[in-house]
Image (cartoon, rainbow, N blue to C red; front, side, top):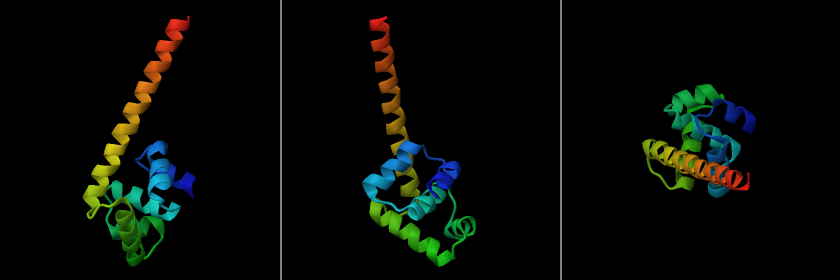
Length: 105
């Protein structure tokens, strides 16, 4: 299921892994979170994931509780802040590797 989520998700694998490990999101919760981060509402999430609207709402509520946000738009902001952090970190690591290669060569 995680591969399916990664194909549809607007989030990088690093961010999805962080959400699962640090916030202990299940695969189903991660799928729901990714759909919400895309801007889908509970009914749209339910249709995409083959859930009832009530189940989608319950999963979204569980995700927000685990991440400690109280609104879906805060979840979106939080996710994109994580994206920025992981992107900047990857760029710094790549720059450091290039510097080391240049010095060695």
